[in-house]
Picture (cartoon, rainbow, N blue to C red):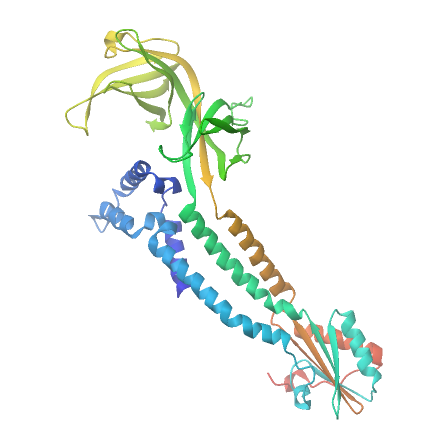
Length: 457
């Protein structure tokens, strides 16, 4: 039942769009992501009823947009781990006894020919046991002999202790779940956009020993057909005022430092602006990231420092293909949810606006630039996941490819009885036939066997 519930939860997590991991640690990003969810589902109707907004609210309360970190999902995982641990503790002593304690001598009824994988050789002597032991050793069986008053016995065991491999499988499952829990609880993931020459904090401002990333330079060379050949960032990482790492990162070639991994993920345009106020004083000089989208065109926003004026920037092109930056000035109003348009203008690369037309500010588009986007992760559960993978793989390989086989032989008078049992992953019938062929070649005679249609099921 636990596995069924987790499977259903996983199906929900696959069908319902999940919030990016970094939004769960950033209230502003979480609010933006939920607003996007509301927009996505606001038009959903069922039987003419608009259920979209209510569904979003219910799904958020149930944690359907963050299934794999929802408290109830974590509880189900914890319960499954406890169940696996209890099951392993309960089964391991019995598994150990089954491989440690064996009965090399079996009574005569055990070799009844009506049972599967049973045979009998007649007219043989004591050398037949030596021949059987030799055949078993050639087939990588560990052999053991014993004698009783009425019979002599040979016992062969192959892959005896591999039966314990299921404990590796259980361990792998436990470590997989534990690794996921550690990553969910203590892991970190965010997306950082940084313009050329800019720096940005990795974790929220105020985090002790926070790291800063600096985009020293960015390049995205193109092929002759205009497609991007590569994109790379010369990235430096600082902590407590000291540079602790630097590397040119590419897709699939990240920078790793202090448990954090910086993955090159995306890039986009940026506009380097120089803004001066009425007195000619410089109030802004740097890139504005055009990381958004408006009407299919790159869009960015900046609040002019020291003022309540906002600038909405949209990158466009003229009919001749010349880049133009559409500027919209947004002035604050008494209603914090609304703003009024202070001005609308276009700006060419290298040009400067007339301050009288742009709310008293001279705005110069000094340079066309680019920003880089990185996914920053810290995954403390990764080591457990790798150990779990190795344990699970080891357990599965040993279980399926090295099943246990056991052979018993009983020599009583001139009659040698042979029996084989094997785990279900082995082809016991085929292996028994091969064993009999090898033994028949040594003894010079074929065994007696009960016809298949006369054997017990």
